[in-house]
Image (cartoon, rainbow over all chains, first blue to last red; front, side):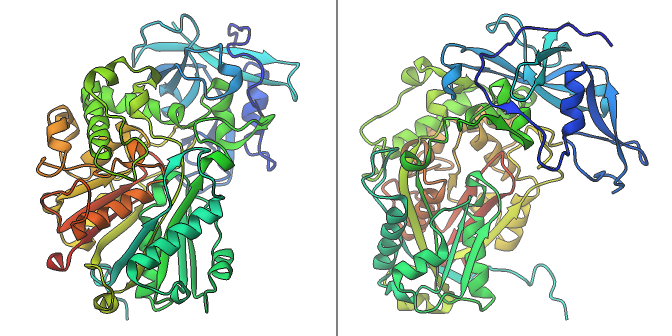
Length: 150
Length: 397
């Protein structure tokens, strides 16, 4: 799937996301670097799961696959941040954060930034599409997934 | 032989006989080390109870408390340590569960005199409102921090926004909670915000922290400690204060509340849908029996959810119920956060709310409610696990 890319929404200096030492979420983060959004799906009961866990919460199978899903969804909730709670955000406020629901993946939700004017009117239920943001020079390299209104 | 769940109860078995706190200050203003604040609060609670601190044989706390039980026992000269319990989970979700755990140690015969406490000096150990400066992050926060969801205001605002969306809750409902807290703080000599009254215009004109939270919807960041003393109910008559009995306690969370990041099925929730009925069941009372409420106020929006889930109004009726007049002592429909709470007294992770509930039952609050035989404390909306507590006078037993 081809998705648009974006230059960094946030200034440099926020913490770089890395998988846990046990590697539980590594397929997710690796997927973002390949323009793929992956979530867990149980190979036995076909239930969706996100965030990841070692066990399917529905049928307790340990065989959970990472499935690529379309980076599309709808806004479940949102917030406009005005107070910088990290020094690097001092000149970046306001910014928009959205919680996006993926109906085609069992309704799992993703947190990301909503691209565009930070003062835009945000509508719960609005359709959004994913936009990948790559940081090949990060320490270590990483990618993020943002959203924009379709 | 297995006792039924209803027979296994703390109701009436444990009493609170002492309360005490350190001086409460803005973050960074306390001259005392955090551990010293804990010691001061514990000694104050012992003095209030007329108790030799060496008689304490149990400690209970929550939220990754740093003032650790064995160090306290050594510092206080505790003759023998018999119980040391910590409630899992961060935030204020454990402020009532810590009392329950201490009470359970007494009811179970593990201890005879438990101090429950929280000490928190954000000036020394980092402000909750500022993100930790780290290079990399993993686990839940990896899905949040790179997007600027770095501190509690951003972590909770989307839950409240969704709740407001689902139920048509207006900003004025949040504002009423802030106004009531600040109103009560003006009468409270301990309150950090005493002398800083709040009115509607000031609230409306205040800056956004994160929409839908204005500045005054957010708790303070403070240095302080608070403690209380638990004994078996049959010993309560040996202490000078009017005894305050545990009527009930509950903690926990509903289905998959801990699904990260922001994937809890009941997202627009304070987390009390299963916990509130448990509390009322143990206590044998209902919402209409409650005369006064202390509800954990990290953010006003969480208070709205928590009060609705405890049966005081339906979410759709929040705008009608949550007015300033309804929420103030002595005779509002539901006097709320009568010390000023986390918003305006002191952010001691909600433990100051537990102490205030004790004062209400004793009849010694600076904003005393007219109906005070049954007092409710609600700990930690929007985290998991959450907890709650019903306290009552002898008349309520």
